[in-house]
Length: 223
Ligand SMILES: O=C[C@H](O)[C@H](O)[C@H](O)COP(=O)(O)O
Image (cartoon, rainbow, N blue to C red; front, top):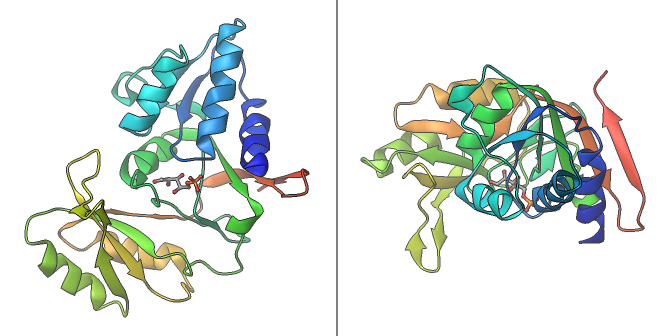
């Protein structure tokens, strides 16, 4: 928890007056949002696009001005968490179910800053089951098509009920084993009718802020 808090707060240092920023989802992004709230209450002027209903509620409670992505051309930066990060900054996201909005917001962002604790760093993506957002319509058919990519999958449930995303869709958590070529599999998965989006964020992150349990932080920069 300490590591998550430190990374969230460190990432907030990149925010400057007048910026339009994206706010990620999850337990690490939470700390960044709390820090942004503090900065706003101390006079920082920014506007923010949330990546989930949960984040919108938290940000509003923090007094952060929210806007729609539809109303802007691009975002200066986005701070978001991840479930896995490989050495090339490819990510798996969507453990919290927010991957679709997160990917749309990330794609509109000049600088995507990822905040993680050390447990998220991996040599290869894939130990964390890949979340894939799919339409409820004939979802079992979509599942069969996805499983042709040599994975096994489970429909995500929460409290015994099917998990429904903010967009009214389902999520399949897919075990591919080691993912050798994240960009390729991401593109192939998104070609399947019924697949709305998958949780691989390939070649999108620019900065990864890593928090270690001993209290130190490392900032990894793609450049
Ligand atoms: O859907 C959720 C997001 O992709 C999260 O950013 C990701 O699951 C990491 O969350 P956490 O920081 O809680 O581990």
